[in-house]
Length: 363
Ligand SMILES: N[C@@H](CCC(=O)N[C@@H](CS)C(=O)NCC(=O)O)C(=O)O
Image 1 (cartoon, rainbow, N blue to C red):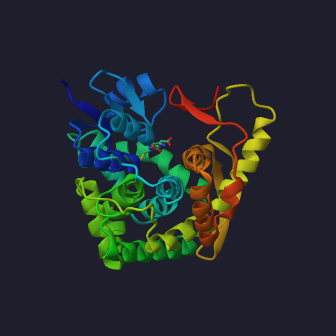
Image 2 (cartoon, protein in one colour; image 1 turned 60 degrees about the vertical axis):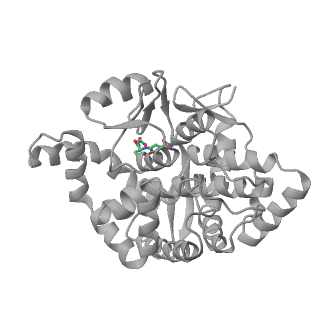
Image 3 (cartoon, helix red, strand yellow; image 1 turned 30 degrees about the vertical axis):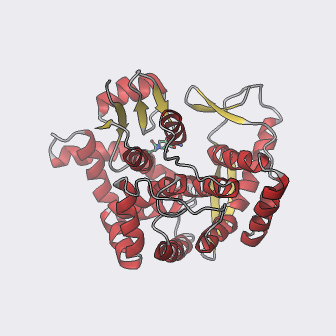
């Protein structure tokens, strides 16, 4: 049997998330740095737009989106599961998935592009063309990196918001560090979905980019050590916290997620509903509907309202919808504690699904 193939990059946020997960699962896979040929012949030819990571199964199927990669491997190798046992834990796990993928990308992008810009151009080039000269690599990396650099203002990262983004990231590091004083991973002694979600922003950008890594190691050595464990796929078959308990040390992180991200998710929901008024059945959904006000670390700005954030949140809302009354009472008490009460009635006016590697209205 041939192995799975992971096409990605060491510098890529979402490739790190997939790599840590695959290593932890013990999946046999080989990783291939995306060069211009792979971009053309695999990514563009099969997925249709330039995005990584892309996984090829031993049967030749192509999977894009880290959640789909995780779900495909879970389906064929269910034990140990990446999902916690308890229904409230699974709900929280999906909430943290949304926060990590769609909100912690803001500090990840800020530190990369405002502290590591020259280095990352060279790094993109080294990954795409290992045999080119340093000058050629820099130019090639710059060409590819311009697109990502262009995302920075869309994420609301500017002179006014940067002090708030940094204050919030530093507070997050302190909160996660305090959690890691008590637990090796988010839900106990082995990693689960939320760990791999956090690994995305925390590994490639915030640990591996040199200037960002120096900051993480100085401010939160505990988090740096967790990053090393998670990317190495450590944690084996250790047990997760039982009894559907949510560790108290996760509450500050959940409060931060609700305070910063939930207002943007609510604005995205309103804009999605507005867009729906003229959308055709099964239409492709735009990547962003518009913009919304956000506040973090006491600074406010405007960020794009990403449709994909609603898609990630849909998985958490599905967990919530599946709860029986007793479980929902516990989930609601938690939502009240973390300032997430608005999620109780958060309802997408239409389901979203991925077809052809793009987000569409569900059919
Ligand atoms: N939701 C996707 C996100 C993948 C993603 O954003 N990958 C980045 C690199 S880390 C990318 O290629 N972005 C290109 C783009 O967003 O246009 C996943 O989980 O796989």
